[in-house]
Image (tube, rainbow, N blue to C red; front, side, top):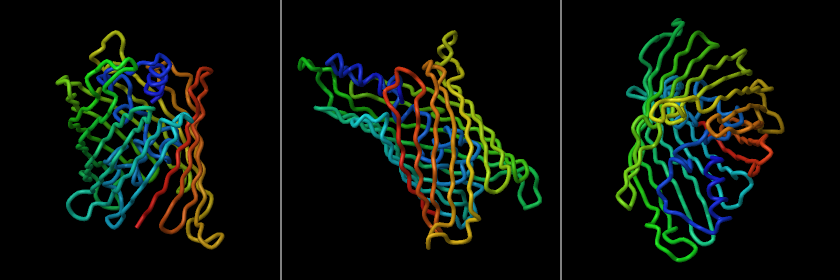
Length: 331
């Protein structure tokens, strides 16, 4: 995401809007550290957690371990880097397996509002999951598999540079896929794997076809008790290895934790049943970033949960810090 912001700031400073053929380099909705308010509060280390509506995006395999009657909806809005022209919105629905598969639907949009002109990157996703091993409450190891299919779209009216010269427009669309897995070892340990954009392409209005780099996320989570969770994650991205541009290279690492303080049963202030805090850190290696500290908090009632996350960039040349606001519903 900082690559995207930096690119647009540079374009504005130079007074030139270039042809929209670089979504892979700019990042955006197709290449980011995460989308959900709660996952980012934990530094993005959520692949091995994936226990709420964010699972539809972060790792659909987690949906297979929902109670069959569980239904989650989540919404997140992000004010990226404190820049008024950069924002992200994410909405998702996920439900447990009621006999066929667990199901998730999500929409993810990055918006860049320039004057004049706009740039939007959208992803519409269908996710599914199924437990394939370790049935029964006595099973010590349980395994689930998940999958994603998505429609990708870029729309832009930035068809001219500042001198009025045509640069070919900025529209593109395409399809993508991914898969995930989750292994639960007893009640405390879970391991997660997510392969994003296993095969994802964009076809531009100019006729150019662009492959979106594959990202592999590998994570582990440990529940110290029902109220306390810690998790770690590493990511590899296609093209991140300078020595082998077509291969996979380490792109980022993430660590985070979460703590809830109430029992979730008694009501406080007439409605609040739990209060949670979380913190994390992530570093994007391929960008040579200084790292980002994250912190968040939640208020939870019977049906709804309100989340907030603040991301503090440790770099001296930072564009700004990011705030994320989220609302979750369980019904």
